[in-house]
Image 1 (cartoon, helix red, strand yellow):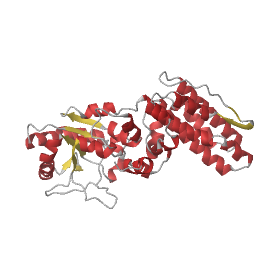
Image 2 (tube, one colour):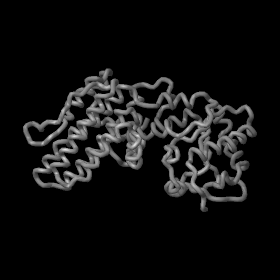
Image 3 (cartoon, rainbow, N blue to C red):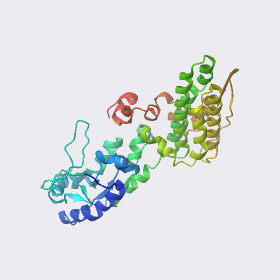
Image 4 (cartoon, rainbow, N blue to C red):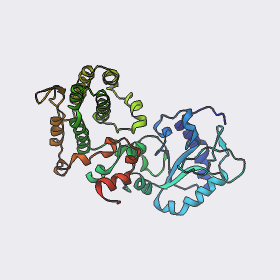
Length: 363
């Protein structure tokens, strides 16, 4: 296939309007549903390119039904689509291969029915439970928010809603738009604690002429500062593949990117240390420009008499934790908070994995 790329959100807005909506009306004129493209995929995040077309990309979307309608119509509606969808839309095959070993599927032309489509049909409550472990966002508790993962929340709040006949899909997305105040402070504290753990190591590596140590630790600290800035600007942190790209869209990118470049590209250990401390100071200033965050008084200084410049993130952590209103959260060990954003492994983007590791529960 030699198809001209169309961004997935644009492609599927038209696919819904011109194909799926009329078919739903033909299937059952009074069926109440919502339609969207959310969940996994670079197309959902609006960062897809022609390269993205090789798997789980193409004419696809989700239909959400009420619990009772889902039980009654899921199978029949899916079969109706299989026998009535066009074979292609704007030249893109609507049929997909069977799932491969990694569950990926690819657009595959056919000229006979049935069509193996990628129209997902869910009860919204079950979809939410699958994504974030709750079946409703109407009365979320602080403990619920504590268990949510950034990438899962990004997948639920990006993409596009094409139709909200249920009247609850858009409301769900608005509720999940960003963390409540205490959770935001707690996650910020957890990230600053990671900075605190390693910030003096740059100077120590410089002492012993460990260039590899300086480079790896400084890169890790830059990544932590990037993550902190996402929270300062009230944005979820994308996983590693997209973090740099989405960092460009933050207001503070133009201030911080040149400094981060110096940290990562310098070869002189002292200049690396100076640039890293400058970056920390700029992040503190950006934090203090937010009226809804507690003020920080940190300025760079020597680490307990040693000639290593640090921001003293330990005191930042204390200010953030002290500002938390829920006493239960104040007492939580920060080592167990935000594991999904501390460890950049794909394994830690799974809600089930995090629950087993941190909460010792599969519920």
